[in-house]
Image (tube, rainbow, N blue to C red):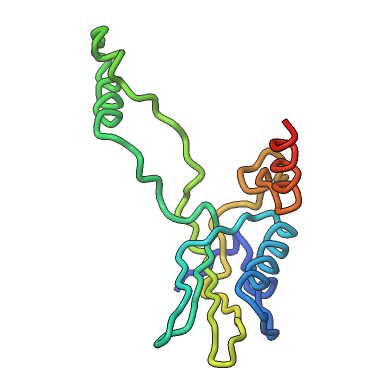
Length: 161
C-alpha cells in the first residue's frame, strides 16, 4: 500500500475513546474538530436504527465522491470546441454551461455507531484527505448555515414582519 506524505493523516485528531450520549452530540463534536482543522464534514449515510439493529451514521468529507450532474451535451460541446467547429445559434441556446465542482474523491470516512448500551462511538475508517485544508471557511456553504438560535431569530422577525 502506497502512503502519501503529501497530505497528512488526521486519524489521531478524530480518534476518541469517549462515548457520546446522542448521535447529535457525536456529530457536533466531529464538526468542531473538523472546523478546527479547516475541513467540512457532511453526512454520507444515516440509519436511525430500529428494533433489530442499532443506529449508525457515516460521515465523509464534503469533497468525497464525484460530481454526477454532467450532461452528455456538455461533453459533446467540449469535443466540438477541440475541433474548432463553429456552432449554430440553436446550439448556442441549448448548450448548458459547464460548472466547477468541489468533489475530488476524498477518501476521508468516519463511522458513528450506537451500541447496546445506547451510547454512540466514533470510529475513523480513513483519516486521510487527498486535498489541502481550506484557508478559511468564510463564504463556505456549511459555514453559512444558520444555527438553531439564528433560525429562531429569523422566525421571530418573520412573524413580526
